[in-house]
Amino acid sequence: METAPLLSSVGGLPGPTTLQDHPAFLRASHSPWRLIPQNVLVILRGLVLAYLSAVTVMVANDKLTTESEFTNWRHFFDFAIVSFFLVLVYHIITFSWTFTHLYYPHVEETDGIESYIISAMSLPRNMASLRNQFYFTMFYATSVVFSFMNSTVYWFITRQNDVDEPEDPPPLDLVSALPAMPDTPFSDLFGEGWFKAFVLINLYGVTSVIMMIEILFFNSIKRPFAIGSHLIGLILLSGLYLGWAAIGKLVTGWFAFDWLDESKVGSQEAVTAYCIGFVLLAPLSESHGRIIHSKQSS
Image (cartoon, rainbow, N blue to C red):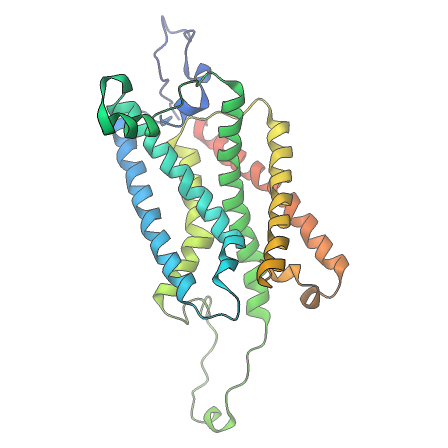
């Protein structure tokens, strides 16, 4: 794959300010593909952000209108909501940066309310700060990894347990009247109508696909040199979420995952094993992200 540097090289040799020398903030505003110039990238990011915004409204409507014995405050502790929120915020930030970097490169030339809005949407002033770059790349990595973890946990653990749970048999007087219908793949997923299925697929699948597209096509962010710090950070943030989920259980009485409920998994040791697996899933998901990123320049 050919990549387009932010600044051209001189005499066929890499210049002093080629792509790898640019801060992560700027790389987030440039695609590595020549077929995706910045004006096209602005449109693509805008479409993704519009889609995520529409999905946000639909998810909120579904979550807030679904009857439950637990308070709606439980959604603040839902890993699917947390990971979706990170993806949404990431795309708000990167769309703003890409848009203003292209159309408003000189913030000082604007004034009034427009100046405040453009300034808030623009790239950070101190882009050379290594600390700020670390914070941003850590946020980017967390958004990617949490979306992958969310999909993995749902499709391979949560959903499998839900499907394996036996359903209540139908009344005896209806058994003879109902034709025997074989179970089809995902029949339970679409059994509650298209809206519920649309919300579930977006929460537990589409966001991961969007972040894979982000890695491959939308940004030129390079693998961080401090990869060890990022891995440790991802492990700590995963553990921090489990602490957040524990607070959610105390506040709302609701378990963020069934495997956090000792009565469902059989013992406290099993809960501990699941928690360890959840935390270790973070570096595994990060490795998956790096494999996808390697395809960007292959």
